[in-house]
Image (cartoon, rainbow, N blue to C red; front, side, top):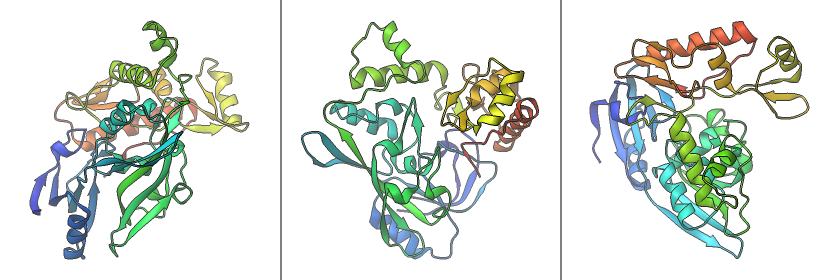
Length: 337
């Protein structure tokens, strides 16, 4: 375990932005993590997972601690359920495939989401009608200041739409080291009602899908819409889907009757941000090396040498245009550094 100075983070963020860390260290065990925190008490810390949910707009003037804890295991099981644990540095998609290979249900709709297991509770990641909170039991985390371990239950995480306590009260205070999920062993709740999953399965002639079929359908859909970060820098969905009041929605619908939406409650409506961005004419647009993907307007991309600031400028232009046209504010899902 060696601390390196002026370390390039280009390979450590999925946007492929060239930025440097003042100091950098990768930790592969809880003991390593404790040692780093103990020996560098006065250093400002920047915790780095899979680098998939951030936009670097500048060099990081801190000690970047890359969480590279590996391991996945079955903790316990009964006739109906199994409790599995993934270490924070495990690649999320590989972890999902591991559960599917064992015929454990609950994570299949979140196949191919970029990032690592440890960052999934922070964002309460989700896709195609499921979210982490649906199967989450708890996560272990180390307090950065005291180096004490704490277990956060689902209730304590206070999950919301792409929200958790780790984005608010506990922000920059804890490092998640592992996550436990409760998955089904039988009577799986197959969810194909959201997005194009049902259509994809129908095209493949599958009428009674297994977990693997749902996962394969999600992977096929995502690959058709989303660029591979290894080939084209991106962080997946850049914006959250805005949840607005039904009053505002009705006002917008009067002017734009074709607006897409999903009912959240009697008083709230979710509007797909990708639809808003596409209707505003941004889909496929390019501004130098920064742009909006041709197949999915929610995804901002780096065509090669874009700076984080250039991508941020494009995102702000999108937000401004959407608000002026629809009166709807869209928020970035990625963390801007």
